[in-house]
Amino acid sequence: MKAASVSDIKKELKERSSAEVLELCLRLVRYKKENKELLTFLLFEASDIDGFLQSVKEEIKESMREVNTSNLYFAKKSLRKILRSTNKYIKYASSKTVEAELLIFYCQQLKQSSIPYKKSTALVKLFEGQLKKAQLAVTALHEDLQYEYQKEIEAIK
Image 1: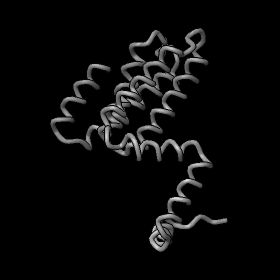
Image 2: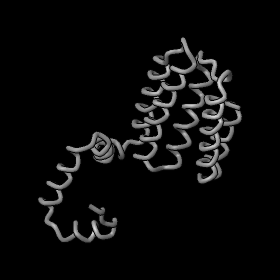
Image 3: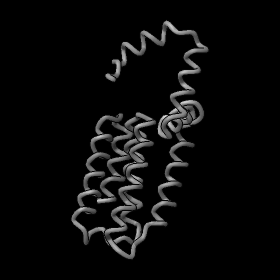
Image 4: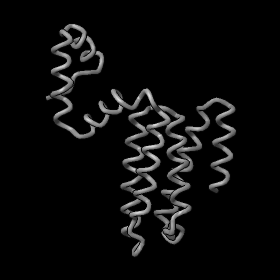
Protein backbone atom coordinates (compact mmCIF):
# COMPACT_ATOMS: atom_id res chain seq x y z
CA MET A 1 0.00 0.00 0.00
CA LYS A 2 1.31 3.41 -0.96
CA ALA A 3 0.88 6.24 1.55
CA ALA A 4 -1.05 9.31 0.45
CA SER A 5 0.58 12.73 0.38
CA VAL A 6 0.11 15.16 3.27
CA SER A 7 -2.04 17.46 1.14
CA ASP A 8 -4.34 14.57 0.17
CA ILE A 9 -4.69 13.56 3.82
CA LYS A 10 -5.40 17.17 4.80
CA LYS A 11 -8.16 17.44 2.15
CA GLU A 12 -9.70 14.17 3.29
CA LEU A 13 -9.62 15.20 6.97
CA LYS A 14 -11.42 18.46 6.13
CA GLU A 15 -14.26 16.45 4.61
CA ARG A 16 -14.69 14.26 7.70
CA SER A 17 -16.74 15.19 10.76
CA SER A 18 -14.97 16.12 13.99
CA ALA A 19 -16.11 12.84 15.59
CA GLU A 20 -14.55 10.86 12.74
CA VAL A 21 -11.30 12.86 13.01
CA LEU A 22 -11.23 12.22 16.76
CA GLU A 23 -11.71 8.50 16.20
CA LEU A 24 -8.93 8.45 13.57
CA CYS A 25 -6.55 10.26 15.96
CA LEU A 26 -7.29 7.84 18.78
CA ARG A 27 -6.77 4.89 16.46
CA LEU A 28 -3.47 6.35 15.25
CA VAL A 29 -2.27 6.85 18.82
CA ARG A 30 -2.91 3.20 19.70
CA TYR A 31 -0.39 1.86 17.20
CA LYS A 32 2.87 3.58 17.96
CA LYS A 33 4.36 4.85 21.20
CA GLU A 34 5.97 7.78 19.36
CA ASN A 35 2.56 8.91 18.04
CA LYS A 36 1.19 8.85 21.57
CA GLU A 37 4.18 10.81 22.89
CA LEU A 38 3.82 13.43 20.15
CA LEU A 39 0.12 13.88 20.81
CA THR A 40 0.82 14.13 24.55
CA PHE A 41 3.37 16.85 23.85
CA LEU A 42 1.02 18.75 21.55
CA LEU A 43 -1.93 18.58 23.93
CA PHE A 44 -0.29 19.04 27.32
CA GLU A 45 3.25 20.38 27.03
CA ALA A 46 3.46 22.57 23.91
CA SER A 47 1.99 25.54 25.79
CA ASP A 48 4.72 25.34 28.49
CA ILE A 49 8.01 25.00 26.61
CA ASP A 50 10.08 26.02 29.65
CA GLY A 51 8.54 23.23 31.74
CA PHE A 52 9.07 20.81 28.88
CA LEU A 53 12.74 21.83 28.60
CA GLN A 54 13.25 21.36 32.35
CA SER A 55 11.71 17.89 32.32
CA VAL A 56 13.80 16.81 29.31
CA LYS A 57 16.97 18.20 30.93
CA GLU A 58 16.19 16.25 34.11
CA GLU A 59 15.71 13.11 32.04
CA ILE A 60 19.07 13.68 30.29
CA LYS A 61 20.80 14.27 33.64
CA GLU A 62 19.31 11.13 35.15
CA SER A 63 20.22 9.07 32.09
CA MET A 64 23.80 10.39 32.17
CA ARG A 65 24.12 9.30 35.81
CA GLU A 66 23.06 5.78 34.84
CA VAL A 67 25.57 5.36 31.99
CA ASN A 68 27.73 2.27 32.41
CA THR A 69 31.28 3.67 32.48
CA SER A 70 33.02 0.32 33.04
CA ASN A 71 33.54 -0.08 29.30
CA LEU A 72 33.57 2.56 26.55
CA TYR A 73 31.48 0.28 24.33
CA PHE A 74 28.61 0.28 26.84
CA ALA A 75 29.04 4.01 27.47
CA LYS A 76 28.81 4.69 23.72
CA LYS A 77 25.61 2.62 23.46
CA SER A 78 24.05 4.51 26.38
CA LEU A 79 25.09 7.91 25.05
CA ARG A 80 23.58 7.16 21.66
CA LYS A 81 20.35 6.06 23.34
CA ILE A 82 20.21 9.33 25.30
CA LEU A 83 20.90 11.27 22.11
CA ARG A 84 18.12 9.41 20.26
CA SER A 85 15.57 10.39 22.89
CA THR A 86 16.91 13.98 22.93
CA ASN A 87 16.52 14.21 19.16
CA LYS A 88 12.99 12.82 19.46
CA TYR A 89 12.07 15.63 21.88
CA ILE A 90 13.70 18.17 19.58
CA LYS A 91 11.57 16.86 16.73
CA TYR A 92 8.40 17.13 18.83
CA ALA A 93 9.08 20.77 19.74
CA SER A 94 10.23 21.69 16.20
CA SER A 95 11.92 24.84 17.48
CA LYS A 96 15.49 25.96 16.86
CA THR A 97 15.67 27.40 20.37
CA VAL A 98 14.73 24.06 21.92
CA GLU A 99 17.16 22.28 19.59
CA ALA A 100 20.05 24.56 20.52
CA GLU A 101 19.25 24.41 24.23
CA LEU A 102 18.97 20.61 24.41
CA LEU A 103 22.03 19.88 22.26
CA ILE A 104 24.16 22.31 24.26
CA PHE A 105 22.88 20.75 27.48
CA TYR A 106 23.64 17.24 26.17
CA CYS A 107 27.21 18.27 25.33
CA GLN A 108 27.65 19.96 28.72
CA GLN A 109 26.46 16.84 30.52
CA LEU A 110 28.75 14.62 28.44
CA LYS A 111 31.73 16.83 29.16
CA GLN A 112 30.95 16.99 32.91
CA SER A 113 30.43 13.25 33.18
CA SER A 114 33.14 10.84 34.24
CA ILE A 115 33.05 9.17 30.82
CA PRO A 116 36.48 9.23 29.15
CA TYR A 117 34.92 10.05 25.78
CA LYS A 118 38.17 11.47 24.38
CA LYS A 119 39.62 7.95 24.31
CA SER A 120 37.10 6.87 21.69
CA THR A 121 37.12 8.46 18.24
CA ALA A 122 33.45 7.54 17.79
CA LEU A 123 32.49 9.40 20.97
CA VAL A 124 34.66 12.40 20.05
CA LYS A 125 32.93 12.56 16.65
CA LEU A 126 29.52 12.18 18.31
CA PHE A 127 30.36 15.07 20.68
CA GLU A 128 31.69 17.29 17.89
CA GLY A 129 28.73 16.47 15.66
CA GLN A 130 26.26 17.54 18.32
CA LEU A 131 28.20 20.77 18.87
CA LYS A 132 28.02 21.45 15.12
CA LYS A 133 24.27 20.78 15.10
CA ALA A 134 23.84 23.13 18.05
CA GLN A 135 25.93 25.78 16.27
CA LEU A 136 23.77 25.42 13.17
CA ALA A 137 20.57 25.76 15.22
CA VAL A 138 21.97 28.86 16.93
CA THR A 139 22.61 30.60 13.61
CA ALA A 140 18.86 30.49 12.90
CA LEU A 141 18.01 32.38 16.11
CA HIS A 142 17.75 36.07 16.95
CA GLU A 143 21.07 37.91 17.43
CA ASP A 144 20.67 38.30 21.21
CA LEU A 145 20.00 34.60 21.66
CA GLN A 146 22.83 33.77 19.27
CA TYR A 147 25.26 35.64 21.48
CA GLU A 148 24.12 33.85 24.66
CA TYR A 149 24.19 30.39 23.12
CA GLN A 150 27.48 31.09 21.35
CA LYS A 151 29.08 31.85 24.73
CA GLU A 152 27.81 28.52 26.06
CA ILE A 153 29.18 26.64 23.04
CA GLU A 154 32.57 28.33 23.38
CA ALA A 155 32.65 27.37 27.07
CA ILE A 156 32.07 23.74 26.12
CA LYS A 157 34.87 23.72 23.53
